[in-house]
Amino acid sequence: MKKISLLLVLVSTVLFAQEDDTVKITKTLDAWHAAAGAADFDAYFELMTNDAVFIGTDATENWQREEFMSFSKPYFDKGKAWNFTAVERNIYKNDEANFAWFDELLDTQMKICRGSGVLKKVDGQWKVAHYVLSIAVPNDLVDELVELKNEKDNLLLQALKIKN
Image 1 (cartoon, rainbow, N blue to C red):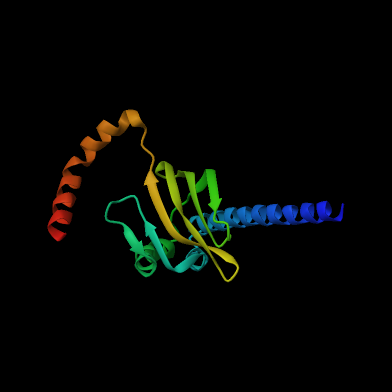
Image 2 (image 1 turned 90 degrees about the horizontal axis):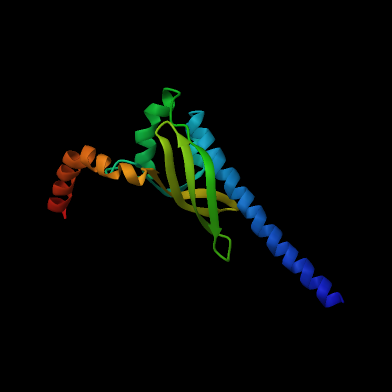
C-alpha cells in the first residue's frame, strides 16, 4: 500500500509540475503580447532570451534580438507597438521541461495571424527564444495574394539568388 501511495504522489507531482509549466508558459506569452500592446519596451524585451530571434511577416524580417530592439524602439517610443491577443494556443514541452515550443492563432491589426516559436527556461523563468509571425491566408485567397505579391517577390528572389 505504501508503494502505491508513493507512486501516486510521484505521478501527481510530475503531472502538477507539467501543468504548472504550461500555465507559466501561457502567462509568459500573454505578458509578452500585452507588453507590446502597452508599448512597454523593457517588459517586452525582458521576456526574450539574449539570443532571441523574431521573424516577421515580411520576407526580409529575420531579426536578431538587438536588431529587433533597434527596429522596434521607435514604435514603442510613440506608444503604439502592436497588439496581439491569442485566441488559440498549443504548447509542447521536452521531457526535461527546459524548453517548449508552441503555435498560436492571434487576433491582430492584420486580422488573424499565426505565431509559433520556442521558449527556453532561463534561471527558472520561461523566455521567448524564437518567434515566427505569419499572416493567415485562407486557401481560396492564395491565388489572389500571390498575384499581389508577384512583382516584389520576384525582385527579392532575384536579389537572394545573386547573394547566394
